[in-house]
Image 1 (cartoon, rainbow, N blue to C red):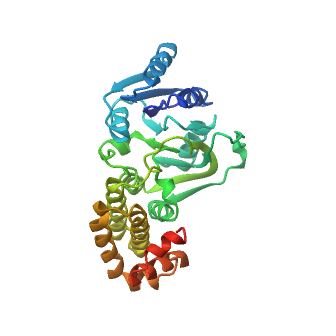
Image 2: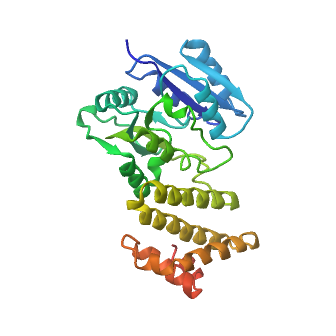
Image 3: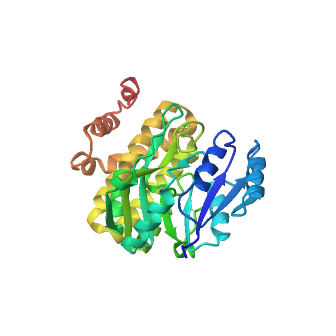
Length: 319
C-alpha cells in the first residue's frame, strides 16, 4: 500500500486560478493523497469554491481562517495533515500530473527525506506542454550543496516544488508576519535532512501573473524583512558551512546594494535613515566586495557610485 501524501494549499483571493490549481492536484497520477485547502480569510469566491470541492471529494478538507498571511495558513495546514509526507502548493500555481509520483519515487529511490524538482515560470499566454518524466536528471546533494544552490538561485528556497517527510515539521514552522519566511525556514529543513534529491524536470508551474507579495513594490517592511532573511543566511552559513561563508556574505551585501537602489527610486524621507544605515554597511565592506570573485561588474558600478555619492546616476542608467 502506498504512503498517504498530504497537500497543503494556502488560499487567498485567487478565484481566477484556484480551480486550475485544485484540478491539477486531484489529477495527480499518485494515489492516495489528501488535500487541505486553508482559506486565509478570502474576500472573493474562494471560500465557496473550496467548500464545493470538499463536498465533492472525500479527500479534500477545508479550513477557514481570518486573514493572517501565508505562514499562518501553512502552519495550520501542517498541524492538520494526516499523511507522513507532505507538499505545499500555492493556490495560483499548478502541477504537472506526475509531480507527486516523481518526487515520491525520487525520495524512495534515493532514501532521502526531502525531494525537489525544478519549476517553470508560467505566464497566462504560455502554452502548457508537460515534459516527459523519462528525461529526468536526478542527483543527490548534501545540505551544504543545497545551501550553496540557494545562494546561486534564491527562488529555489520556495516551500513548494518539494516533498517532505513530516518529521521535519515536528519543531520547524514558518515564522509569522514575515515576507521572506521561506528563507528563514528551508535552510533549517535542509540542514536537518542532510541529503536532498534534486530532479531537473520542471514539474511545478509558478504563476507570474497577478499580485505577489515578493513581486510587489518595495516598502519599509519588505526591505527590513529581506535584509533580516539574507543576514540570517550569512550567519547560518558561517555557523554550519564555513566553506561557503564568504559567498553567503557576498549574497547578503549584494541584497543590501539592491535595497539601496530600491530606496533611492522611492526618494522619500521615510526611507532616508534606512538608506544611510545600509550605505554604511556597504562602505564598511567596500574592499571585500570590490575584490570578491563572483561579484558582478554591474554591482561594482553600483558600489563605486554609492561610495562616490553618485548613486542617483544608477536610476538614469535604469539599474
